[in-house]
Amino acid sequence: MEIVKIVVLGLIQGLTEFLPISSSGHLVIMQKVFNIQENQLLISVLLHFGTLIPVLIVFWEDIKEILYFKKDKRYFIYLIIIASIPTALMGVLFEDFFEKLFSSTLSTALMLIVTGFILLLGDRLANYDKKITNFKWLNAFLVGIAQGIAIIPGISRSGSTITASLVQGLNKEDAARFSFILSIPVIGGAGLLKVGDALSTGVSNFNITAIILGILSSIISGYIAIRYFIYILKRQKLIYFSVYLWIVGTIILLYEGLF
Image (cartoon, rainbow, N blue to C red; front, side):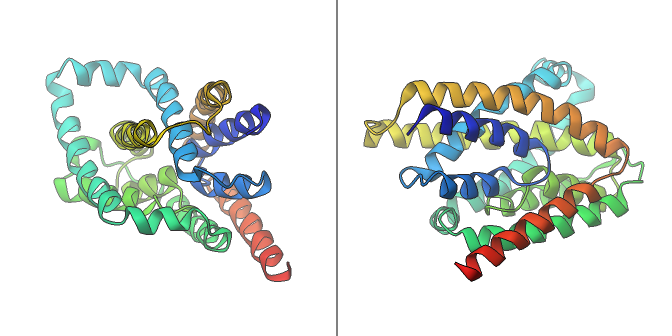
């Protein structure tokens, strides 16, 4: 694969991982544009892996307190564990199903449109004031289910988890914080599993330099996306992303139907 293609994919991954427009969906589309046939899911996961870094940077103070197991963060750890369980189970049980969807542009387009409506719902409900300390285990479990569904290309992980939190009354700031920190065990675990698969099957088809540059580009764009999305969420403007997704999804559906 050409280096420039992977770098572009990395930029798109970083932006779309934290902007609620589906990173996996955009990677499926771009892989089709670039005519990338091999290791589609593995490339996606490796670039996802790079987006852990900006989360660590932006939320380092929270993460540091979690690592120190501070008293006021123990409940947060509990919620993260509860929310990670359904995501992990869905990823393992439906891995083959999800992997097949990575080759379906039509399915991705439909899910982009669905994500637009998910964001519209979140936009209408982004005015509650429940704190994360008032979240119960069932609330966190439902957010984890939303994250598991977002493995489907075209469904935004950040959009789904934040909307699931907002629907249950969580305030905007805690919803964003919970969503982004929740991505760490899921993305990290998936990345480690796929790296292990790559090493066991061989990586002769990989351009290591291109992958490294792609990961670096995903880190930079991911950091920018997190900062921008928090700004947009506070101003309750998710509808802008909904419109974008409806337009992109419709264009792809029309293209697939015509050609």
